[in-house]
Amino acid sequence: MKRILFSVFLALFFFVLLDFVYFNLDASTFGYQVSFKFSIPHIVDLVSAPLPMGFVLLLAFCAGMIVVSLLEALPSFYKSLELYSKNKKIRQLERELQLVRQVIEEKKSSEVPPL
Image 1 (cartoon, rainbow, N blue to C red):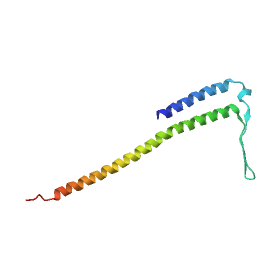
Image 2: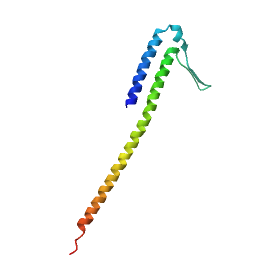
Image 3: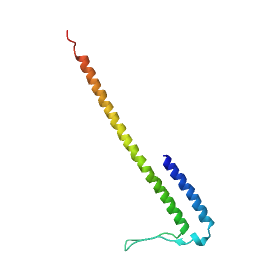
């Protein structure tokens, strides 16, 4: 959890920093209009609205930071799943042990001591 918060904090910090740079440069630097095209002949033809190059760079950076934080969270997610499965196995073994103890107690109580 600490890593995720750290990654989110870094992403927010760099987003603010890049946003500051983006809005303080002239329009010709990051103002170049970019449109994305996706085409499968005779099926679909998609064209995005023109976006400023700086905005596209900010979006790419933010998406990258989100992916990095998710990749950092994966090992802890797997460890928590592993811990859950081991705890489940421990509970199952404790139930079995309790049943065995009950059976032993019943055998001891049912045995008649020799005279």
